[in-house]
Image (cartoon, rainbow, N blue to C red; front, side):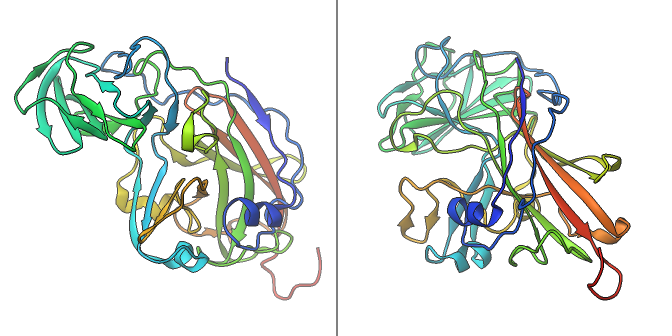
Length: 355
């Protein structure tokens, strides 16, 4: 069953400071409850490769997923400061699979029969024919290249300490695909509802938030959106968020008339963009759970997932001067969704006086 809820995100300034960065944020100061929207489709396309169980025992019982497909992965070179988060260089990528929580030392098995094509010190790749392949990360391998392996029988390796999970990547014809889409990893259910926690206009990608009551010219729109794992995760990753599978937005007049129809900001239901597009999808201020800053590891610290609604600045001159509602909806892979609305005023004419 899919559900939708609208979550009010009042007090955007305090929210952004407390949950993401120390950025001043006027976003969502005037947010108000929104009637339930039509349920988003759970997946863009049906799985073509067939379903499979988990790579750890029991194979046919659901295990906690602590990292979602598309989650930001960030390793900053600089110190753990706001300046580094906003301007620092490093390694940034989209999570290419899902992280299945399991104790260190747990045996990992292939989810489909195949032939071992790659073995490294910490991961194994198995190709299963028909353009389908799987990678199993954070394991100490016990197989060799060229070996035929059987699903649920061959031990590929055991989870390395201190990983506490096995990362599963699925490929179809060389492209990574979302293992949580219907018809893939089974069983999997999701009853949690994603939330849109703040919405903010910025003059630039690294600038402070603008007052939504006076917006003009080209602006960046940053949205803090997250979901929570549907099954409790034990240990250090307990209560840490994951990203929604889909983020959409629309603009309507304050009277309710649609001005800009539904637009897609991010869609991980099938695949993820190239890593070179990372900062076109995520806004500066984004960092992963337990992010790395040089030699510093942010132990037990939750991440911040700020999405750009548009890859390039949004030109408010597309709209007539006036008052509008920006509605943002976050949806998970099973179609559960949550929305928030930010009322804003476009004022592109000369001066600043007047409504």
